[in-house]
Length: 441
Image 1 (cartoon, rainbow, N blue to C red):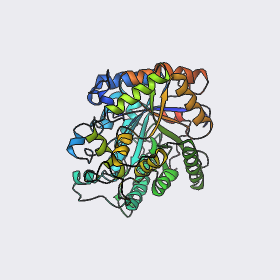
Image 2: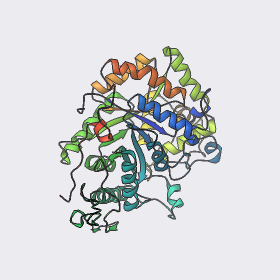
Image 3: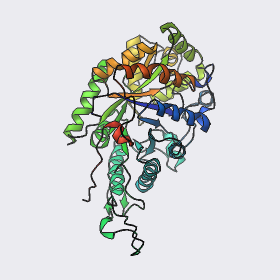
Image 4: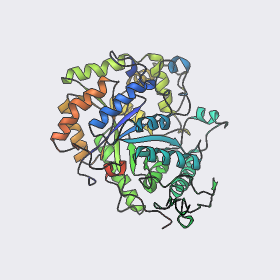
């Protein structure tokens, strides 16, 4: 598959719905985050539709919001992603399995070994979503009083990624000769110690598992800041973005592709995947009614708490019917704050309460309409180079997922925008990515 032959489709599955009140929707499984049978059904159904991958986000703490809002949220509680994907690897054959791993609160050797293991268990379907973790509560779960500064987190992440990929190259592909007659398990000439000594880490290596089937599991990154985009341009195979306008998405697409080429990656520029909530109805009005009901199910306490998280500031002391004051940039993610303020300006939202009701459930890119209308917008954004594909967020499980798979995917296939069958067996093959050469050869 070439870079632009077909769009990519990934499924955002942790949490099972990104919308704050999706778990309350009539017919939704409110325990889906912890229901292995439900998640297995979802994975098998997505694989039957030839999705590229399941994408499992992660949090290393509960959301840092007041308890009145937190008690109403399902979005920070679920299975640990690598554990769940390891289980799903034995129940699926082709779909990619992408998990989040933090470069701030883990160690490179652990990360390299876990994702190499998942790649072996799945036959070459693993992907690592690289995050630096911007939640101060996560820091306290690991014995730190506060986060590293944003720039330092990304510098640490750059070194972290170099170590992980170096460890994945510890062994030649044919290092394990398993010569029973001679009693030689591996050829020492085909083993390499990393002997890394850097600013943040000292790691000897080699990794104590064979080189992953894909060479390297697929690298995914979602940073929208200058530091995040630099990391993505240098390392990522796939960039996950959350643009809300066509023009903004096109500008981001051009910029990240340019930076990728400037980083020397001419043969395999990164794929840009747009996170998109999709609500499907038999008519446009039915779809809009579903979306409106989801927002009505967001309690005011939850909406205000979610706005605090999005802005990176506790707004609980503000007058909800007053204006939002000027806010300084925090050590947390800047992209969500920027999106909130852009939405407020674009839609004329002037009070804290108005902003909370608008963004309290979900405030990223969304498509709401009939199956044909959803397919139309996917086609437009793909053909006009706003993205290379979509990370689909379902409003709830199971029906929200079924609506997309049963009604939208066939239209995309009929238009030759999406594959009808898998051509390869690894995630890199699904994405049209080459297998990285071993840096020690």
